[in-house]
Image (cartoon, rainbow, N blue to C red):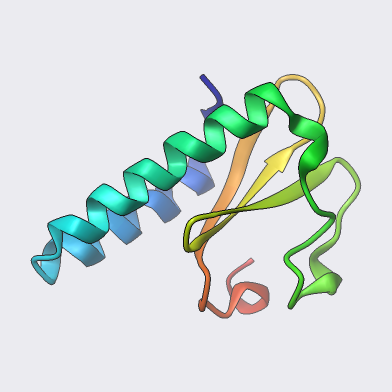
Length: 98
């Protein structure tokens, strides 16, 4: 299993609370499934990540990669230990939240 930085945990917690506050259990389930898929892909094939989300090339950083998991962009460290460092809904204004 891939670990999460405290900031990534905070982002996931915010998303879950947002969905729960709007009584959208299907969105919470979809988020959980996306995170499980991202963890699996990162653990099995960390080299597949992009340098940055396609709409935001300015977010490229050494030692970090991004993958799209369902409707979420997930950033992770590319060196051991592999860690998820950020999770954003696909339409979030990611540069202003980093």
